[in-house]
Image (cartoon, rainbow, N blue to C red; front, side, top):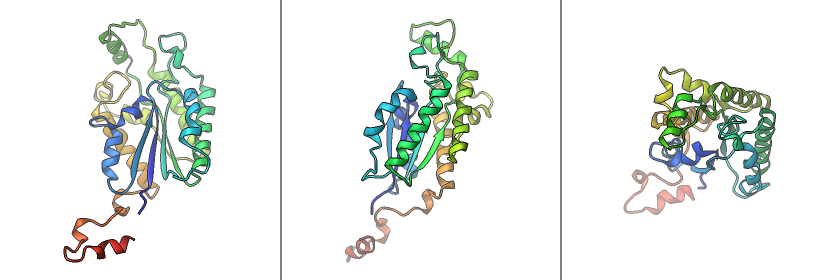
Length: 240
């Protein structure tokens, strides 16, 4: 039995998803033996640079179609022009256009794919300043602000609604919890283990709402309890 393939496409928050306590690792555990979780995360990338990867990652009418995918960009696009990370800055109109192109390419590659858009997380500006100091690269002003990142988060939601796609408003979700700045973000931007847990929970929720509930999906091969020690072939005849 061929397993469904879940592909996670994004920046460093996705790239780091298989670290200890990461959201991608948790997702792989949730769907163990039921789906393959593929991480395509590229640290530092914005949507402009992500476009150069599309033909390689999502070829038209792929022979290995994707069942579900997350698109998780915006944290770098929302870097402020004129500050230390302006190389990553992408204007909001271009950001929206780029996301639309990514969705389109995914659909061309895998016509039946479930595409889920994820907003960038909130920004703890003090945390960004503290992190810069810890790296011996002190800055006077943060290279990102929560207010500006919120504009990009809203753009993700607007596009999801326009294209009738499910979405995760991580920017708002995290801020519902008091003390989110240090509880969910380890450097003002990247999630802690608790922050990864929030993201994992939201992805599972959205997948489940789209009829991809882990507890209702079949195992790829029989559970060992279904195998007769004297005639093991019987269990595998059911699958084959």
